[in-house]
Amino acid sequence: MSEIHVRVLDPDEWPSYKDVRLRALRESPEAFVASAEEEEAFPDSRWQERMERSRRLLAQDGDEVVGVVSVGTGHRTNIPGAGELFGLWVAPARRGSGVARRLLEKAAKVGREVGLRQLVYWVGTDNGRAVAFASSFGFRPTDDRRPMRIRGVDEEDAESEEMMMVYPLGDAAGVPTSL
Image (tube, rainbow, N blue to C red; front, top):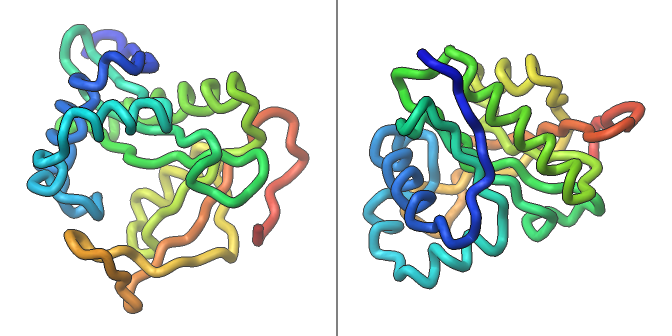
């Protein structure tokens, strides 16, 4: 594996984001609420709007796209100074190789650059691997929980839940256990 390069996509690079997002949905459907079939039907204008709302970070090994993550800059949370990390995906063959860590490092840098004080990351409570990874990076669990969304339907699953994890940006002294 050569050097992994993570960059922020420009808004006019929405076709690149669309390609990797659809690839992620196809290769790891269990990791997302949305489905590839749903998002393949989106008009180009929807993809362009998505690029305006959040920063999209792409991990590449040479010309090969190996991961993606998004940083919402405040519109998805009701927490002042917080942005949301979402849509994290790494190509299955690259998992465990440091790609996710590189994506999160860049996401934290982007968050600081746009003036965020913390990143919020919602993780399924039954996804031990994701919880362990986020914790190893410095995200801390909070007491905040919400029902998981059901894939392909606009409903919630009362049986499964996500917990909010928080990563302080800058010189925050600590992370609250509830927000």
